[in-house]
Length: 141
Image (cartoon, rainbow, N blue to C red):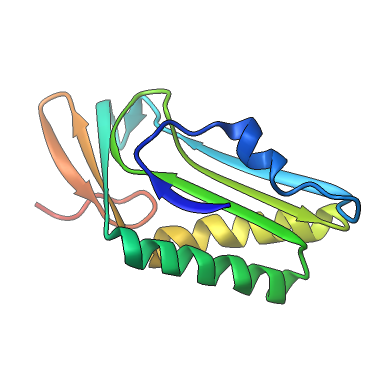
C-alpha cells in the first residue's frame, strides 16, 4: 500500500498490509502532528503535494528499501490537507524476515521521504505561519 491521500490514516489497516507467512518482524512508524515546534504553539499543519510525482517517489523508495535492506513488504501512506494537532500525518510499515532489517528500512524510509518526496508542510502557529523545509528547521524569514 503506497499512497498520498486526504483521508485520515488507519494505522492498523496500513500495518496489516505488510504481514505474511515469511514476515518475522513488522516495524511501524507513525508521524503525528505535535502541539509545539521550535518554541511555538502549533495550531495545525497543512500538507501540500504534487500527487503523481509523490506517488512515484514513494513507490521508488519502497522498491529501494526492498533492494537495500532485503525487506519483504513496505507500506507508505502520507496525508495531505489540513491536519489538527494529534492527527496522523504519515505511516510507514515494513515487514521483514528479521526485526533488524525492518527497523533499518523504516528509519531510512522516513528520513529519505522527508528529503525527497514532493510533499510540503506549512505550520500554522499562534501568531503566524511558516513553510517548513527539512525535518525540523523553518525557512528564514
